[in-house]
Image 1: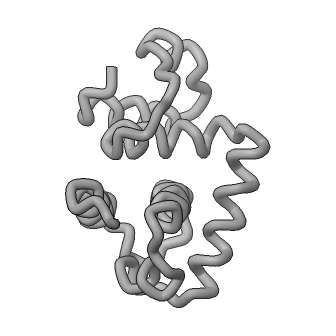
Image 2 (image 1 turned 90 degrees about the horizontal axis):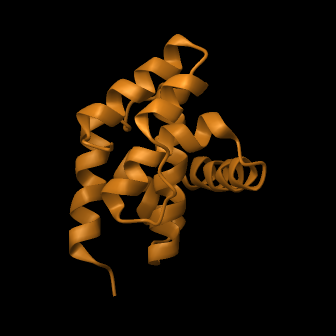
Image 3 (image 1 turned 180 degrees about the horizontal axis):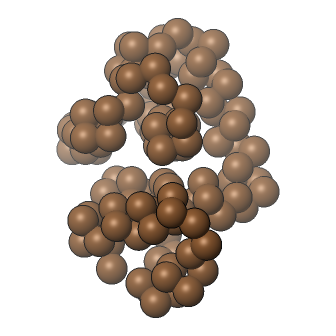
Length: 123
C-alpha cells in the first residue's frame, strides 16, 4: 500500500526543486536519483516513477544505479544534497550541526546546500 502522505511530499519536492526539468546539474540530478530510489522502495514500477518526472524507464534505471553507487561510496556531496529531502520524507538520517556543515564547506555549492537546509528548518 502506498502512503498518500509520503506521495504528497514527493510531489511537493518534485515541484519545489523543479525536478521535471531536463537539466543535468547535480542540484537537480541528485534529488531525482534519491526520489527514484525512495519511490522504488515504496513499490512503484519504473514506468510509474518515470511518469512523475516525465522520464523514461531507462533514465530511472540509471538513476537507481547511480543512487546505489553514491550511497555505497558514501559520497558526501550526494548525501548533503539529499539530506533535506530525507528529512522531509521522514527517512532516518544522522544530522550534522550547522557548525559542522559550515566548517566542512569548501565551495559555493556547499553554501547553497546549507542555505537550503536553513530554509527547510533542517537545523
